[in-house]
Length: 94
Image 1 (tube, rainbow, N blue to C red):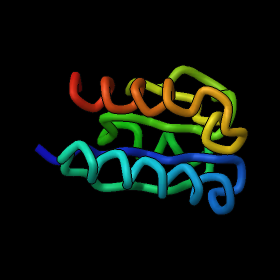
Image 2 (image 1 turned 90 degrees about the vertical axis):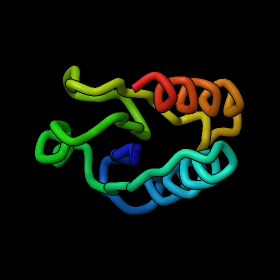
Image 3 (image 1 turned 30 degrees about the vertical axis):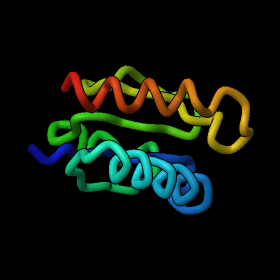
């Protein structure tokens, strides 16, 4: 079953692209079918009903319906393997 993953950052461009690339690699390595929606955090509400997972580059302004993971570790390089594990677990359990 294809998973819908929303990748969101403040502007919807720079950091979300770094995060999107990492999530795509994770999905491919773990044989997870996926589709990505890349957007700005304020736009998440438009897509959240179809999301299996939301991955953000920072703190979310509110609680979303889907599991939400903050992936700043992909930008900083600190604890990025834990974020990988969190994302894979969320996708396998959704």
